[in-house]
Image 1 (tube, rainbow, N blue to C red):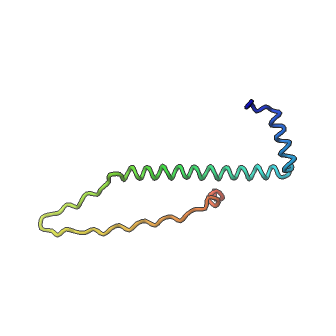
Image 2: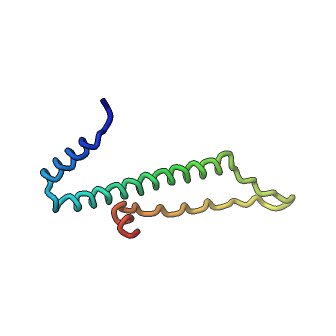
Image 3: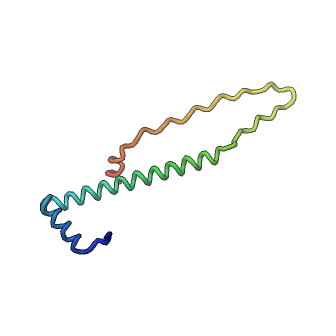
Length: 100
């Protein structure tokens, strides 16, 4: 019952041509391809971001810098905190796909 037969596909193609017209079908297919490319790129970048975050978290787990060794007779030095790096601005996914 779940088998897709060749005549099912033929009927589907005829219905699509009647609904959209022969001139609009290539444009619709092209826009569908672009949308799928954008979705694929975004899911890949999300997967890569998750993996990068996991690697950074694993690398920094349990990391504590060693305290500076003091020599006898010298005062203890205080270290200034390091400034945080600026966060990159968000990137529009559509613009990223257009640049590629």
